[in-house]
Length: 163
Image (tube, rainbow, N blue to C red; front, top):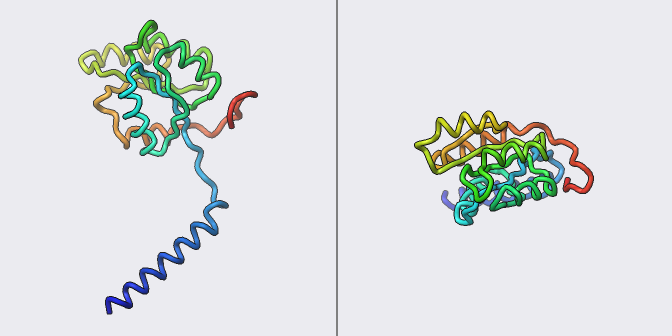
């Protein structure tokens, strides 16, 4: 009896693999949300990259400052930027305004480890044009998946950008 169950399972797996390799390339793929991470802490950027990738988003670039983020936003044309509030030189709040000036369609999520200032940061982030403020402790896969689900239809990239 166990042998028959094993044979059946192998048969099902063979069919599944055949189907996936035969028809999957022709199936329409949902557009991937392209993300730019802006944080001056490399360890946090690595962890956030893992979380976003696990949630199904595509990280197209990482920046440690607002100036780097502006350059990458123009070159890579991401759909979403996740930006820390506390950055060297220019804050993430002021950086949100600058990124939105160079990439008006860019969605920006502002994050911070300073949960005690969440109300202040949320108000300032929204006034600067950010979609939301999230405490770093609250970042998780389900929240990142929500960001992916709210990405608008793919837009035509400007000349020189990547499709």
